[in-house]
Image (cartoon, rainbow, N blue to C red; front, top):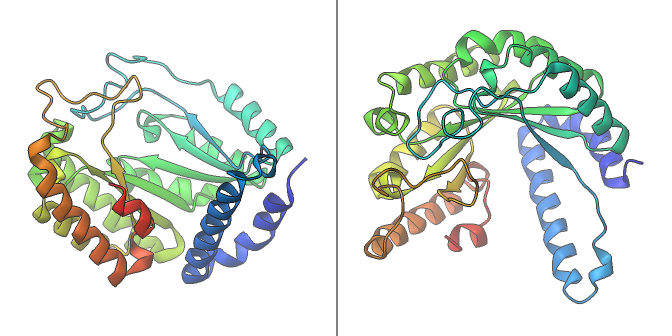
Length: 282
């Protein structure tokens, strides 16, 4: 049975989509609610009851990049894809159990041939699909996805210019990714909730990189989520020469980056999705 929280979300989300600032406020209030519940649970553990809100579906392991920090589709699950019938049944189960937020993931999900059908099925069930992509194929795919009902996209953001191309090990891909973002904003404006997932690792752990990231976020009216490089999952790697991993001597640079991120958060709170507490924890 869907929980009261799920029912309330279904009721108010259509209205919030038309008002981005109210949507950001609602997201922050929801985060504070979760923080209060979990803080109280330290004293009263029974206050936390199972209430799944979101499901990640990895549609395909195939990818059109070769990121230094990722082994998906190469050493990890090469060629693996989910059949559409399995995804369809999974979405129907999500609807029945009140799990309404569905993250469509990869590999690179824009390579999944039935992606538009998946989005359309999710929307028809009253679910909220959101796509995590590298954005390389965004310009040629977004029109069909928007027509199917997709309104939320997050893009992996691994640096800018040649720094990005070096990390993904593909020339000219940064320009292609940025062209997709520019097309999306030009055609659909703020009707699509676009977030940049900025990867904080050794190559981006400097003030020049964080300031350039901020300029891109401002240019395309895209909030940023800071993702820390990590190796807790089997498809992540710290690079062949461990060039992605932070070292003791990087502490001063990281502290500068965190100070700058906190400055940006205080300047434009809605542009950085993490709380101040989360940024300080870096």
